[in-house]
Length: 583
Image (cartoon, rainbow, N blue to C red):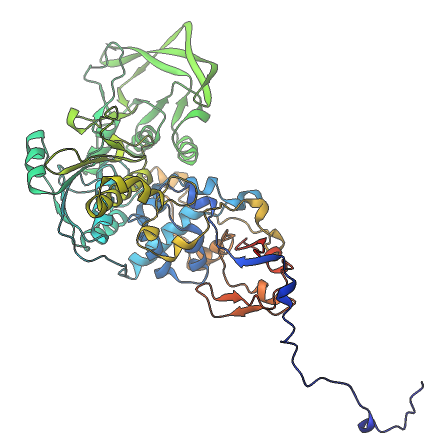
């Protein structure tokens, strides 16, 4: 029909309904059921301290730096330290690696901690009511201080006994200032003492004193670490020109300047060896780093090795000391050349190359091949079946006196700061469970606090926080909807030039700005977590996503949800799941 152009539009009638369609509950059609299902990020699994990294980055993106700092502290009392010296295994598991490059998690952690220092922020953390048990802690290193931190949050009174004049252990005496300034370390320690932890310095605990502590306290945590150097087991290693690299670093941290003129040979391939070599360069000497394997096999951080070579450290691979002797006032070091053959523990095995020796003349030799416990009572007996051996601690509750717990380097397979934190946390949680529920409950209760299917423990889960509600499923890269992310370069860490670095022990890595930190935090996929992007609300064809009625900020009205799964597919972070509807 052709409408007359002169027809009055007021006379047109358009059909409309005065009834609602709410009576048609389309949810009855559903055979698949979507739900909000927050999951576990791979970075949190890889972190020995079990930090809630995706939530921390989400908070940093929004400028909630205080809240992000508190989120770190509930799992790790050393954010200023770990933001600088942690080997950040979290970044190696970051899903963003498969998209462009991993998020600079350690840089963000340092920024958040530095921001708290800059503005004098005090944390507001939940603390349990006071318990009657008192805990003695032997050693004010990372493990001991971490144990004191977590025990204090759980309501226990802690006394820490430290042999040195200052607390911190290797953090204070064994890591150079260019990596860890005193101000950062002291700030983290201050947070611990402000919880009420009493620290007594200059109190070296002997076997006899340990017996007294066991009578006065309900439990004793031994976290004194390793302080005795490992022998080279070669002729001449007891000559006056041969000494320990860790003692060399301690002298520097004590304000002294050891003589480093000429060539100094450093034996080892770990972080301590690299730190010694770089310190020698800063004191005006020439550093010759000798390692029995290849560069790619070095346990030291690859970036630290790279910077050491930039600064003038000379690295010789596949050589091992064979004989040490004196000649005309110098040290004559005979080196056995090594060769690669087969595999050992996932890396190539090296053996001596028969008949291939050479000699080098140096002014001194500094050993950095590892440390061991100085006293037999500091070592854990892992062969005793009556002792409870955990992943990062050993618990002995057999005696009538105090419970004994060993932690830190004396039990950890990996000797790192963050593993020491994990040890202190595990010991604290195990003691609380033991005191409150008995030895039989320790293992099952700890397993209930694991982050996903990994071995890291969460204090937040143990304290009953919302993190306990997450699915233990670990989000893979394939489960991220990358259509909602764009390529973005990783933040470039500002750093002193190599010419500036070797002139002093000033901190090498410079601070990043708040803008840079927020932009870097935005790169995080926030794997498995809902960041309230509202894709589920926008794409739902039934408008069955209801905002503001759930701890996650939304819920689904199943009376009208047909189970099409659009919300699950369009969730960028895999914070939803789609399962079969139960009859």
